[in-house]
Length: 235
Length: 290
Image 1 (cartoon, rainbow over the protein chains, first blue to last red):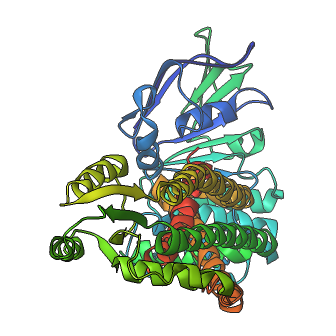
Image 2: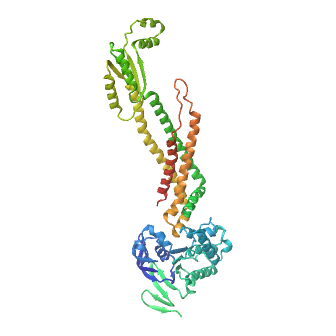
Image 3: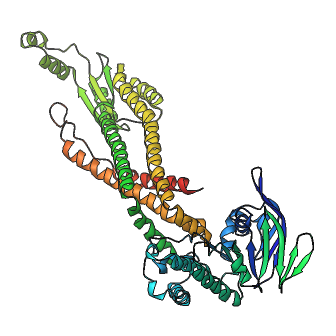
């Protein structure tokens, strides 16, 4: 589903990612952790073709991003949804319009769009807000709108960049619960966070820890494997 | 198709996002169209007037003094059958003398009351304005007229013809650059407004791209907005021009000019609406292509 080989990326003299390699199968849940500036956002941007892959190789949902022409980027993004810390929703549009936007660009028929949007909005507990302008919603509700827009299209891969960064602990836990629900339905999820608490609450998920653009540790089923090959089992 | 019409509707609705900028652009398009139309109207009417009254090519034909009247009258009949003839004026020696004496002051008229006129048979033949290789045509016509039986000499009114030709050459030379210049200003005005629309919709465009919208989906509303600005501006410009023409059409319609202004031909008026529409569309496309 997702294969990254020897991926490096620089912004001028600054190397944001250095020689990263990992792969994910369909339906896996990966936490991408690390402090600010570790390279999490750069890695995610490379995965949804917001940045060009110049060194190394990346395959996402069958698309080779190194050789992906610009006209094919929309096709990739119909398979890969993204959730951002700053939500990226339109405050002057209603909840319904924000969520429906992702289906409208695909040219689906209105009956299908309507049914799907209402189902997802109901699933995320926003039914009573469906006709409200997003600018009038709370932060947690806005984040749920962003998630609704991402999952309404049934993406193969869901990328989330610090989706809980603007939420309090309780809301953050609920948000992760929502991601887990969609993961249970077969969506591959990559979630970038700097909160170790969130990661600790989900030991069954995979984890990659980045530092200064390098993968320094990987966690798999309770075992943390450091880049020097030494592993440590958590009890 | 439903999506396309939805995007068309969005293009129209998006005009309300920056009403003042759109209004200013609309005024600019209207004003430029009006100016271009005014220029076309002025040049077209002047052109037309020159063609009708001064663009004719006239030849004066003088027969020999001893020319046979029958042969001259046969020649006059053949003149009327020539291609492009507008008018043929003929004068027998007596008619010519009478015509000449009527133009002289009263006291001098008696001098020309002779029994036998000293003037020859004369004809003035006028041809309609013609385009193309006028010089060759004039040369050939002159030769044909000189070849008529008993003709002594033929003169042509080349000065009037040259003035007309010079004007037409001048008008066709400066019209094109001025129109191109106006189209350029038009495209800059519309393109700039579309760029502004684009900047104001940057968040929306970013989100549309993230959810997999294709370029045409993002661009169509902006192209529609540009085309709409262009066509409405063009329409208002032509309407303004019509109002101006209606008020000015009889300004020069007095003796001795009798020059009535005509409105633009339908094809030119349509062009004044279609060109801004196309320019609006193209300049919007240029503004949003990146």
